Structures are given as structure tokens and as C-alpha cells.
Image (cartoon, rainbow, N blue to C red; front, side, top):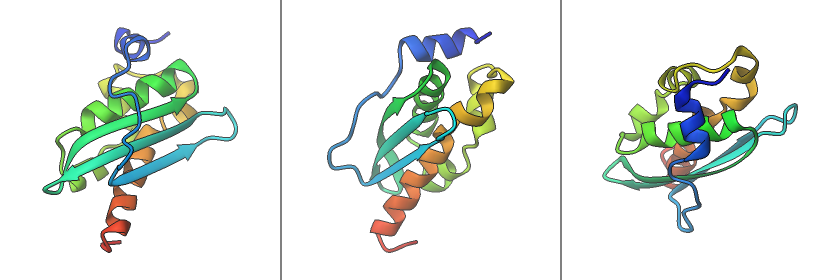
Length: 124
């Protein structure tokens, strides 16, 4: 069973979309279950000023990406890099064990977006 928070983020996902001129983009996926997610970030003064996502996957995949964007907004890049899969699952009130491995890739996508931004800035 999914928590009310998971269902809410699935039915009413936050920050859906794409940032055309994103400062960083992170895309991850799991070929086993087919979940794919991309997170786009805009950075201002070393903080995530805007964040959007596109996810192709199950309800849990959409909910975790939505929650990850909510957690990342306003954070410094270093703080964003510390957001874990477990943080996202905890914030959603838990995920069924069978969904933890594939659906909760969103923190990884966020980390990839930050790495992409840093690489573009010559910091990697």
C-alpha cells in the first residue's frame, strides 16, 4: 500500500516539466522496470533556484521525483547532493519494499543534475 503522501504526489505532482535553458540536467533509469526520470535545475548563487522533472514510470516513480524536486528547491548544491533515496522515501511516508530499488531513483537524477552543472562550470 502507498501512503497518502505518495498518492498525493502521484495524482498532483509538483514541478512537472522541462527547463529549456537548464543549468544542469540529470537523467537516470532502471532498465529492469522501465522507470526513466530527468531532473532539470536552474542555479542562482550556488542554490537551486528552480527545478523541474519529467518521469516515465509507475506512480511511485512519479511521486518520488515530485518529492525530490520539493526537497531540492532552495537548497545549496552541497545540500542537494546530500539528499538520499531514503530521505525521499521517508518524506513520502515510506514506499513498499518492492518499489524502493527501481522507483526511488529520483535522488540519483538530482545528483546527476548537480554534477552536470558543476561539469559545465568547470568544477567537476
